Image 1 (spheres, helix red, strand yellow):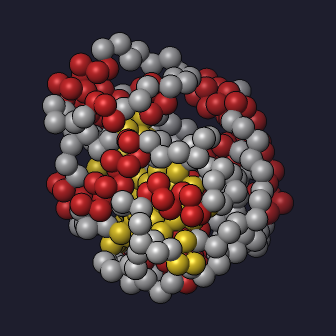
Image 2 (image 1 turned 180 degrees about the horizontal axis):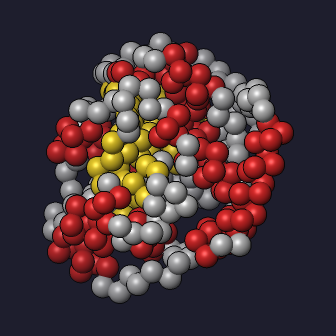
Image 3 (image 1 turned 135 degrees about the vertical axis):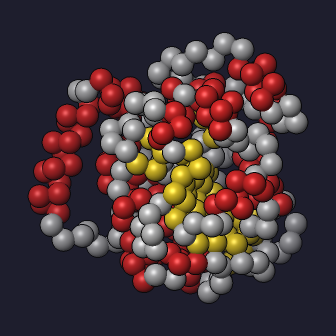
Length: 314
């Protein structure tokens, strides 16, 4: 393993709260109350209740494994209760490296930077270990801060996480489509209201060089719960970051017309009709919405015969 280098410290201090917090707080609380009692929101509200308590802790300095030498950056949000990295997550990281991306992993797992760097040194150039709060948006914020402070020069950025299994197939065709847009997502959803889902976001030079981009991330504060993350970030990011034209999506709403989260309720159609190269891990785990997963192995093998099912651990 290459020698590790300490990178500039990334502050753990939450950013200043935007103005107008009182009215915004009241609106958020009333919206969350309504959604928790709605048919659409009930499943996700129960999920939020089951999530473990998030504890704030001091963040150690990020660790660099190798220098940043490319012009494309991917920031992967990671969590594992045991602090491990499974084969599916490693497959994602290696695939992105193969597509020319330098990968930074930001984890909220109980570990330390040196130990975690040893687990991902085959595909990551740097790691950040932070407190388990704020969900993926806070991990992405830490990664962007690191890139800016380290003065890395990149013209394409991918933000994603370890919530999905895949890619099931090669990404080169999808990524070349993505490169034609300044702001891009993998899937659109009608759940709650039409929006581009935040599990896979990508930005080009027109957005990355816009002063509002860094300003947006500087204002991202740790959400108190899953619902606040959805309301404050996922339902807003595509309009807030439409800095160089509208946000595009690989799988638009018109493709599935699913009134609820398509990653759960239309996962088969996304793969079979749109060749979506990912599917939700939680479908094989908690499966809170009790989605029918009968024959999932045969289905994946039929749709993506080259994919190694051994990478998937139900």
